[in-house]
Image 1 (tube, rainbow, N blue to C red):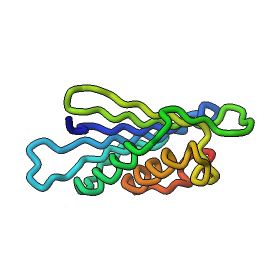
Image 2: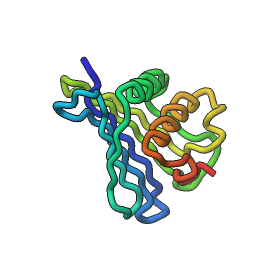
Image 3: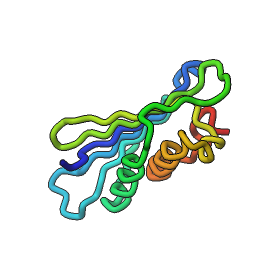
Image 4: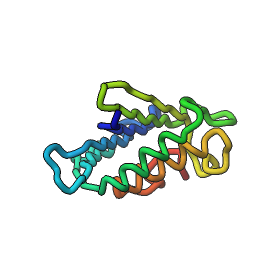
Length: 137
């Protein structure tokens, strides 16, 4: 099976209209092997990019290394942000990963570090910064 779609969603219920949606899909009849990236942030217009298949494979491999399909922030946060990643293969099977309250500390946390790394690659491929994610600061 080949991964045909990767979806990323990040939001915070406390801040209205604060969300980031990123979708990676192969371009049909594409001889160069480019992947289309659709990005919608908050209430802004959706924009489209193209990345190389190699970059997409790196992102997919990072997602595949996530050990825990659900990770929660340690400590007490009132309504932390939520982030999810969904991988869809050519047979329609889906693999779902979810995390609450990603922050700078997530990169050193044993349970969150793989998810944090995959999120970093996804966000950079969409030409955004990690600081665009609520709770990251």
